[in-house]
Image (cartoon, rainbow over all chains, first blue to last red):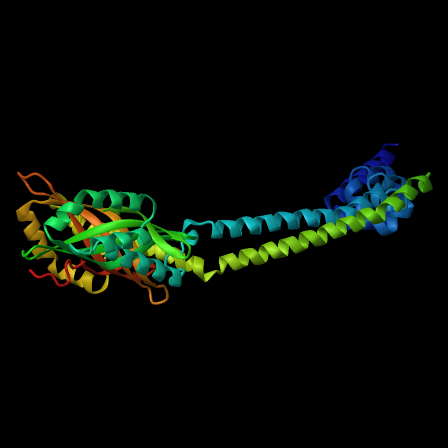
Amino acid sequence: MTRLRHVARSRAATGADAHGEPGADARVESGTDAYAEPGTDAHPEPGTDAHAGFGTDAHAEPGTDATPDPGTDTPPEEPPRPRVPARRLLPAVGAALLVLAGGGFLYGAHQLRATPSAGNHALTDAEETARVAGEVGNGLARVFSYTPDGLDATERAARSVLAGRAQRQYTELMGRIRADLAEQRVTLSTQAVRTGVIELDGDRARLLVFLDQITHRGKAGATSAAAQLTVTARRQEDQWRIVDIRTR
Amino acid sequence: MERATSTPARTRRPPVTALALVLALIAGGFAGWAGWDWYDAAHDDTVAYAEQRDAALAAGEQAVQNLNTLDHRSLDRGLDLWESSTTGELHDQLVSGRDAFAEQVKTAKTVTTAKVLSGALTELDDRAGRARVMVALRVTVKAPGEASTDKDSRMLGELTRTDGHWKLSALGQAPVGGNPAN
């Protein structure tokens, strides 16, 4: 009896040894030892055993194998249900992603175009920039140049050059000083020496103009003065008109 | 049992799949168009040019202001700023005249500040990295024992782009009265 027990113990010891190298022993055991000690071998390492012995063990121990992996081993019953919605979802998910991507692109494009830089066409629209600068510079020169006998002509010119607030201010100013100008024989000649377009947006523009003004009073000599103006202009009937003038 | 569940699914499946496919195609078309639109905006030379214009103007206004600002109590800092705002010939002039100028300001003990009233670019060559700027500014000078005086001035500058930064390469007063009698 004691001897037999000893043998049994030593067997158990060899069984314990099998755990030391599960990968190597599993295959060997499944073929030979599985019958000798099926209980001890199957339970300690169900996971590794099930995978290691897929091909060979599946038939030997169908009961233990079926419970760990029910999905892969029983294809005919369940799969059709989850597979079809997934396939049907694919275009929908794709469409949603594409719409999102498109939205992202549109937003990005909008961000690029909506920058204040892009909205301002000063210099980027070279033709219109040159045109508004020329018309405003010439307009200022005409409006602020007069001779004692040519005030009517200047005021007529002002009506075609100015509009809005600038026209009202000009009319008010000329009404105030006109008598003096005629009496003192004042001649003013104005020249735009430099005109820069600060902002050009559609039919509205803002400009900085450096003016030189030379005044003659009667027989006295000339005095020259500099003026810096910011001018707002509006395009009306294809002509740029000055609607606001501010001294800088 | 299996037949019962699969038959309604089979009749429902084709229209839904077709609808999803059509939607996906439309979405694809939309995404493609939007992507092209974005690419177009991102590679629009005009936008890049406009950004250069604004960068040049901002740098030009700042540089003109810097060059009209100097405090005798922090001369070095002020003159360093002058040098970092300029490039080319103007920079060389400032560097070579620095000591003499610093001596003058130290003796005069003046504090000069400037405020840009308005500025505009009159030319921009994006490729060559050159631009011309006009600036109207008000310069305030405070000498010891005197009230501060304001002077409006108008300046014309030339900007050159160096290492991606616009700096002044020339600066002068816009001449007043090109041909006055006196």
